Length: 584
Image (cartoon, rainbow, N blue to C red; front, side):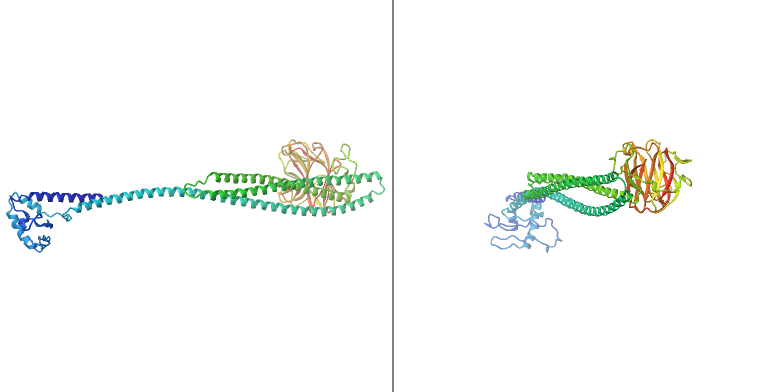
């Protein structure tokens, strides 16, 4: 636009200069007639206020064939206001050109060349208007440039404000998300508390059932005691008093253990109540911190100058974080207390079950006559255990069902049978069996044998009884059966003691340990093992060298079997004098 205006002004300047030159060339009236003389009109000085306007777009060359009907300039106004006839002017112009001298002809021709430029009024105001228009245009351009710069600054400010608002929105969303997570965690913990309360209610129900069972077993024990009293009628008073004292000591020991467990549970309940109170206070503190954080966000003014991380917001955020850490710590403490209480509850239930099982098994064994009172063997303290004053009465089993290892079949391991002894020498074998056929039913059965293990490291030996439904000859379990097991495992136990265990085998893969007790002596030497199992009364009793070690209530429903299996782990295991007896 500026170039076009400049070009236009240049054309105007050149046109003005050309006009001045042409006028100067024709001003000498002494050498040639003026244009006013040629045209027959008066000059500007003679015309007074009126100026004569001559059309410069006149033909320069003489052309006879020129069509006079073409467009011509409007004739100049006469002094009295009349218009000069264009045709007359056309007729006179060629004659004037012919009369010009050769020196004057070029000036006339130059004056007659048509130039395309805007017509100017006689006072020259067109150039001034163009200059004013240019200045106005430049001023408008400057204004637009300034407005553009102002808009750019506004855009930058809006962008900064938008970024600040986006950051604040992100922070707000983060706090909202964290608050939702905390609320979900609180809901989860409340659910855990409800589950624990439900578990406690269930435990109370189980305790009530156990108490009912204890009452029932107490009635059975009273009946057994009456029968035992009849059996020992005529015995001396010291013997009867000793038996009653042992029974009372057993019950008192179990009651003391249960009382201790009850106190432990009460302590755990009190600890949980304290922790729950602290957790409630921490949750209230978290809620207040969240409220303070929301108030801090609301207090920060909106706009680009606002800072989401101002001191108020930072302090509120730190308070929320501190409350979250406190809740997490208290929650962890409460979870640990709940686990400890669960362990204490399980221990109490185990004590109850142990008491019930001991009472039931002992009562059943005494009622059947298989367990009788006895003075502990030499070297065994009367206080060594609740079974120290009792023994198996094996004289009742007089019908022999099996004697020796006739008909046995070795399954895994390196077995050797020599007379009344069967030995397994493969130290790398962990699941060796020596299977013996033996029909077993509902009758109470006594299994008697001697055993020892001279192997080093991890060793084991025992007897599967009431075996049936064996499908895999190399399985971990032994069909459906019971396993009485002696084992020593320093790497697993941390000592060289021998432990007596009872397992229930459900199939060839699954076995569950039901009882575990440390023996005062090992199996490096020959030990006499006697096992009595009564499927009707559902108890099993194990005696080692004449000392009663286990009386366990089975509840397993094992009342039939087709075989028995001697089992070993490691080398050096031997069995001798194996026999099986029932009552007549």
